[in-house]
Length: 568
Image (tube, helix red, strand yellow):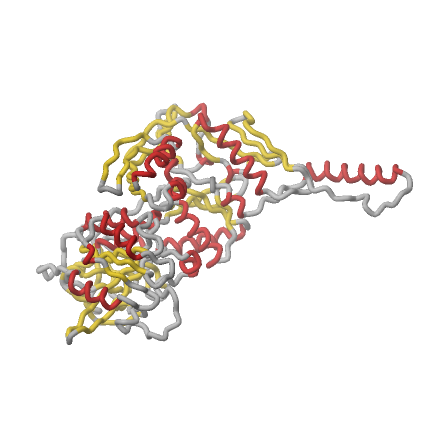
């Protein structure tokens, strides 16, 4: 961006495209960003459109929709760490779309950089040594060579000969003043500021408010032509009317839709409840605003008697859920309670009805259940052969069924499994990265539903069922899982003035019990000598107080306990 003059060389802004506080703190990209740059070389002028995408598996949908809008991709590999967990999966996605790929070894300025070994890993992935670029984003070394490679190797946009205006919507967000803002890749024809937009799948229509591109700040234009990437302010009030992946055109034309990509489907479900029930409406407003810029986040109202009104939310994974939770607490200053994660179960009742259950609180009484069906997924794991044994052991403990293993080359293999989705979403990816030294990566697709033996475990604290801790488990693992949760709660809940009993139960049967001993206040500390009856009187008085507290007192459970309990 400095070399093309999009930003000044003395600009002190770091992580310019990762503009969210959370992105900067965690060192990850959460939202894709699209910018336009202009570059002159040998009296030729070039227009370059760049999309910066996330890499984590939970945000894979951001990558897939970006690839559809592009002609080529830069595959960045860190010289200090080599090929990373999601590199191979995203590389396969880019190849499947038919993109021209330029391999880049970055951060070569660092003392711990091992550019040669990173390059060897890229060669093993099938790249030619002469195609690899070596760069430093910090010093700028090698970046001009990379720009030359982009111009030479990545083809200009393929422009349809049809003059029908068509554009692929690859991102959107809501602006308070301009309505729904869409980012588009114009495939054919051109769009003018005076036109009226229409969307293929939603049938929504709207006069264009303004249009332009990011460079990286907004630049307004009157036209967007075939091959260009830019933004259009639609003036629409509802984000659902301009879906990501939809085809935008102009009123009066009736084009064929552009092949988009699969709409992201939430696979993990959690409930969010405000700690202070008076903030329910504030929480709803916050989630509506976040849903406007995140097509994969969904929510619906829910009510649990013991903690009141809240929302059942759908996510692509636990990192996605954690990011949304933290954004609500930071950006909107709302303290929230979260329930245990779950997937969508199908339950056949004895009455012949079939219902969908996304949380333990919705789980019907055991006597009414005929059969429980849980979602399964096809899982592909890309790894080094030396990690195969440990990965197979991990999959075995997660009820996975082995399908096949294929050697991709001398150093890479793909292991395929069928696995219950619930086993995959809760810390599977973190465990996999741990046992494979960060190298293994995954790709999965939900396939079908299969019968499951599932029970609902309730957690009781001081005799009361705490609904957010209720969770669904495999019947054969119920006691082990209950023991884990109860012992973890014993560590997390601070000691109180009275003894606190933590229990796990299925129906009326108690599986596990732990007690948190009370904080002992020394009420006799100031006495010195004298008759022992004075001391006993004070201790009896304390005993009576604690008895009364047991009847009327409430156990204080810090909010972060609800989130920490989900980390196995």
